[in-house]
Image 1 (cartoon, rainbow over the protein chains, first blue to last red):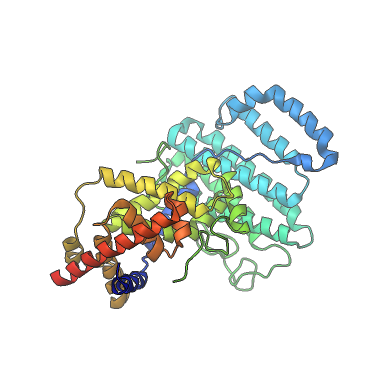
Image 2: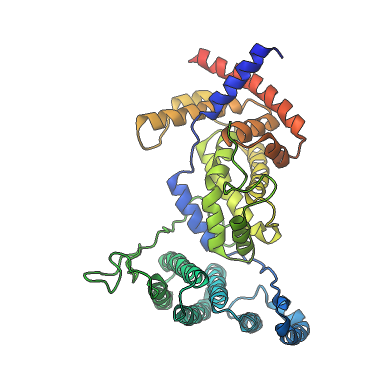
Length: 264
Length: 196
């Protein structure tokens, strides 16, 4: 290749680099994000290692023995849904995991993750087994109550980065869940509405707490601030704290993944 | 020419940034907001890859959506020490290949001219997007490997080493493909200018 040709190709490379870099359209960005947050996919939990703390070893050993006894059952229960006979086993495993957690911020994260699983369960049940909707809603509301409880404990402690991060994650979860619940509310029949509204209210309580932790300035228009009122959320349910949902949910391009209920 | 790293957060080509590893670990264990944070970070890169590999915006959107849904399902198998964008590109290559195999006859360069940008905003933005669509049309005439190298090297500013890792070829091969791709692209773009 001649020097001249080499120079021409270098110029062409620069020209190509100067071309527009299209960004994902806004509608795709929002719809796909909502869809990903709401997709009812069972995700395997990564293993944690409490054995790093020597004093926990006897306790961990005991848990391992019990876990070994229950292995068959818990494995079978991993994909169970509220209303299934093995769901209680799944919940027991979740409680055992929380019991092994000594840090309150981590415990809050754990509770928030569990509530993520419950809302995914709720969506799956809504899509595949409407008869279990009431049970799934109850389980979800109970999970949110546990998040609220864990959040109250965390917020009562002095501010640390871990505390603030955990509270922020709980708040983000709350916003996401409210968007998902509103989306569900629009699709479900009238008899399911009271339960879904109760779930939204429970989640709003978490949002209100997480959105205004002690020592953190209130957002303009936040509930409780002079002249403030709750900000409306798409769907007509106000969110205490003045922060509307940023996650519009619409069933467009980017539905649940292949093999998942609801995927076209 | 500057090169972006595979994470865009100060990581090396071989190793993701610490916050990316943390996000990926949390996403792998079922934390949807961590996954959403990774999505926010890498959506545009995946979209651009799909945009330039396919012939229409709608196909690019469909493929982008499919890539992230497949990534969500595949998260339990993801190794957090591997750059997340490399994981996404790996999925995107397969999804694009599936799309190309199964798609109907695609829109041509003439279609792109006949259907100018529908993007909102100033005219120059729309014109730049139309330029991008013309470039996409020219890139579509290249071989699959040439397309990947051109997109990743010059439109995504990846280094030759990163591209080599992403497409699984030696760096010297990438440089060879790059030169042949540029030579072919020069001819295509010149032909487009004459047609105009």
